[in-house]
Figure 1: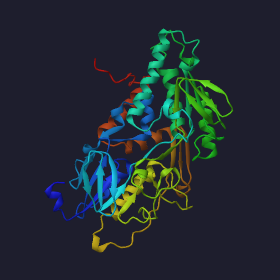
Figure 2: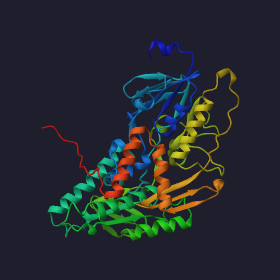
Figure 3: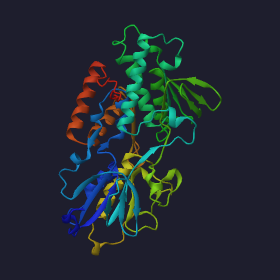
Figure 4: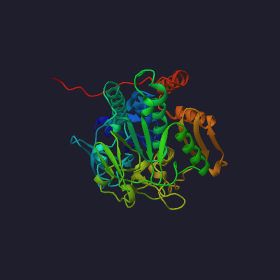
Length: 429
């Protein structure tokens, strides 16, 4: 630590994770009373709700991510530390990094997010694609485009798996990806491959319950099902996956579906950091916190976002969605900004559920306000437009918003998916 920081009288808040919670916390800290170090093992913030559009060639990687230093550049009280935290001494108030470095703190906020969970299904880790990072999205996009290129110059009649995409999970990620891939395969790419029947692409969405989009109303669920079916997506409801192989997915009833492209969008669990720091955890590895987001029995240690099991009004943990993380970040920014001598008992965190939204494809979206805001539902073009506006607002950075708007507008008029690049790491020879 530099000498200026050592003599700074402001409380030092260390924040692990440059996601929605961490960035909103930084934005709401009072520079007069606090300074902050934002820590992440990646140098960029990822707007995860749009990763599926990178995978479907609608947006470039740079459209959904922005370097952290650029985001916090105008905040004199904030610094960025690139690195991976491996341990914490809660008595000494010190963090240890993978490179051996250390960082003292006055208050610690753990907001490292979540990773995908395979729920113990054999083969998922080795054979399925996931969507939790920019690299994941680019890898999936390159794989999909490569399968089409190979089918264009080889006889795929004996290999049905090459032209089949299986998506597991009927939540927003699975539904939005299925809709986007149907547009890519059936509308955007046929003109590039006039000799290839891209309508032979088989997109299947597997969901273990009897409905898509579980957090939405029954009407919106049925609407999403109708739209996906009309757009060529095969729905397999009440169907569980038993195992994955390199060229197939095995269902619980024993059916074997040949595929070279299996996308796992069935669930998440807390970041492994929760276990590494030896803090109290519950289901899904999420950190147990009280009503003020303080980690149980650990003063000056807090958790927020997907990694935290923050209790809702019904006592169950709040959902692992961006609005929860954003509101928790704002809440912690305000309560940690109070001067030490004037700190009063912290008010409990109250999540305000404003609603949910998802798009099923072009001109087809569902947006529902929560009952607190009237429960109004928008479906079709209006729901799709509302989704676009909200996501443009929350994208980090003016250039990201402008780039996404231009790409969406161009694609809407032309049906052309601009980001159709196969990107694979090159080996030096």
